[in-house]
Image 1 (tube, rainbow, N blue to C red):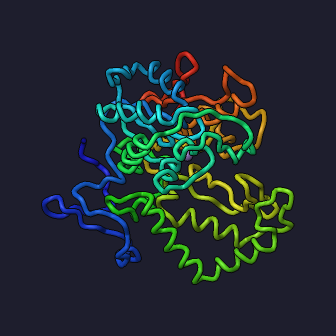
Image 2: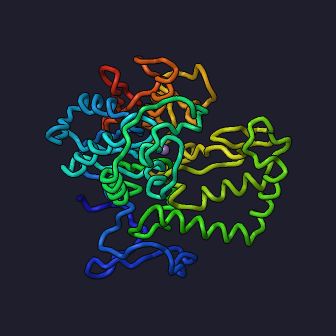
Image 3: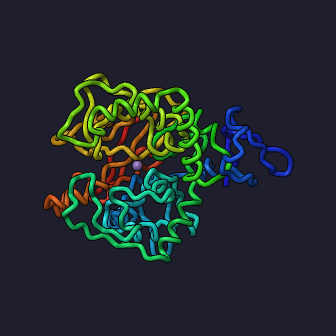
Length: 385
Ligand SMILES: [Mn+2]
């Protein structure tokens, strides 16, 4: 590993012993679940040299194998001409998450690939059953978010041995990879959140630690009670047929706080901001008063590559606009590039009868060339500066 040239949020003391430099409020937290080891693990150095940065794979094994082939990777021999970096969300929704993890693990073991954890890896480590992750829990038909409970989405189920292996692999993943000219994080970069991270620790336990702590703080501030009152007045806000008749400011503030003040959540799924009054919308089974923060509109200290946000390869023709829809399909937003071109939508596209020429694709950003290569398109597309 090259010597990192940025300043770690922790100071290194004699003999490789790491002295934690946590924010004062965290220094007293004896139950902070972390290890004191020799090297920071949650933020690691990116290898030197040219890189191919691959977007959210979401269980689309076929797309992954096609893309790797285009990038000149020999999967059988685990050889790659350039180091591969996966931006997280290897799993869920697509037909073969187990197969995707097998391929990626092989490449990692050969030292030719690195992976940062995404919110889907975090959900799995936290034992949370979510839409699209039933393959891990023995349920192949779990696409409740899209109201497709009755539809069949055959996906390969993980057996007990695979479950253990996948959990072990994910528990070793960093949250951030960086070097002088580049940073990779799944959803959002925030220096304050990064500074709160211990040098090592179980990301699911850390996320739970901060969530519990926030619960206490929000309870003490009275926000939890105010939000609960607002929710109770509107049928619990889980019924699409009963839209709220006014803006629920406490609900918005509470939702935003859980996301923004939890460093693990912030890095893996991004901040959320209150919508304008009347701007609430129904998604994922509830009425929402917050929307994703377009944090990439603010300056960052170096080029930063993310995934997470479903980006389109063509201008919007159907559906609700997503938060990247005001950036041209292959452009940077300042120094931030989102390389998730929504291959995670393919299960939906197949459900609607499409068998080829998918809207969603699996992309790789080639660095330093700044070109995108897709699993299903010849050539590469320049992304500009
Ligand atoms: Mn994600």
